[in-house]
Length: 249
Image (cartoon, rainbow, N blue to C red):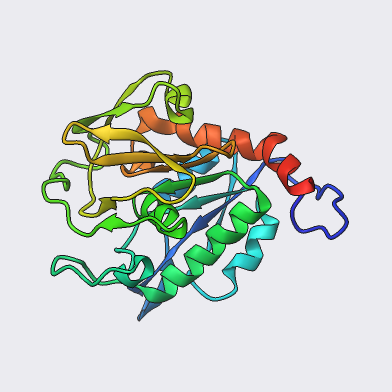
């Protein structure tokens, strides 16, 4: 288990897997103050709780990667654009405000999670960060992929590779998803396979083919009740023996 130096299992007081969720740093007003705040949409927290996990926030600051040794899975949340210099590109005119501190902290969290063999799920920006961490690139602007409907409303179909882990979890080779992105995976990173595409050919899902559970999805699955099995699978992978076997080896 993580957090031990001798390979002995770390006891969980609750018996439930702990899922570290990466958070954003944004200016926020609360009570009588307006300050920088570490924020995450509650939908991420609730869906992990509903899946049987214990959510903990990983703030976008130097040192967050050390906390990865104390969790059983990592959920990379959505947010602002990944800075183009992280994948060797010049900024596109449509690229939004970036957060270099978050990029650095989140990529360090991801590196540590992969080093430990933890299950990882990336959502929207999280999928893009996963791809960039593996040396992949991004389309900095994709028009027509931000819906006006609420996040709980799916608006387009994604075709899944039949042999993918994602299709296995979904029990289907097609999902109907929502869409709130303007960037997307371009060239897949090392060891990553494209396993989901929209009807226009855009990349919607990637997986690490050599690991039991490292998945990135472009849509905001945490807001779609029908996609709860994806988070249940993340928690189940965190509770199971596959990831811990990698760490103990």
